[in-house]
Image 1 (cartoon, helix red, strand yellow):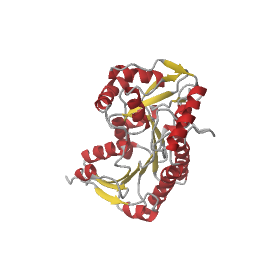
Image 2 (cartoon, one colour):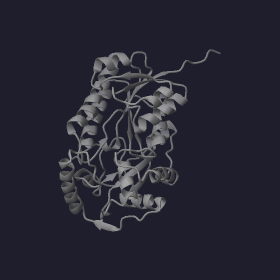
Image 3 (cartoon, helix red, strand yellow):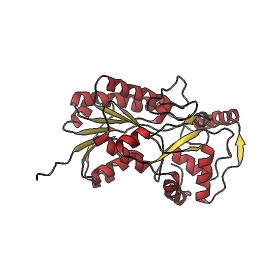
Image 4 (cartoon, helix red, strand yellow):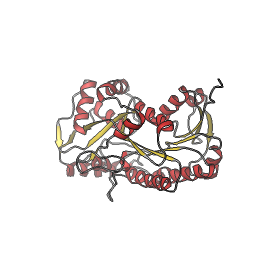
Length: 337
């Protein structure tokens, strides 16, 4: 029997938190990798996986289309994820412009299947209960990241409507060892005692382990249906309950003070001014954007569709959080990046 040749899988964002896990999973399954990275990206791990490295700018449609030649599947994970004092122009170029360029390149190259990694942020919070893939984002945004992901999500959905063979994935609040993003900063701030208190009315988030997200994304290349969107969520927790669980696992005291949303927002505005005075490089534990995001909103969406169609079951926090906090606890004394 003639063996089936390995697929060539194109990936943007393969050096990132989720993308690096996806690259390892795909390589472990015998897939051939072609990874599009920035000129300055460190690619040692990808090279050890045997990946072909293509360096370029994300808005270069012609170069992207050439790099897609011969690819059986294309993943677009490259994005700027940050909250607080951010470079709005850069975030717009990467999250919106980069997605637009990727979609056009897929069209030009005639790639048979593409997967765009959006976010449940792009679906928006729900007034009550739990949302799903059909949830529509309203006109109000709590952060630049949220706004740009909404715009990029709408570009992807419009491309699906035009017939592009595209699957959209919407991970929820992703956590796990190695997280250097906003969620990871929040955990570090908790461990270091940098949070004076928590909201009186906290937001609710769905927490999904990074390895489970990578697993679901890999499954989408074989079981996902083009034209469809899949929520990749996990276990729901209020921010305050999540904070207490993190503190208990780390053996530290959880913040016991509770503040009303206006007070947290005012503090965030003041600390943003301090951060800007330092050139934006100083990341403080509270910002206007983090205050707005965590003020009682319900960022909850069901993964029933992904579980039903992909055979995917995300692990509970009781399984994924201990290893995560052990990793952060080992780095609690490390300097800020």
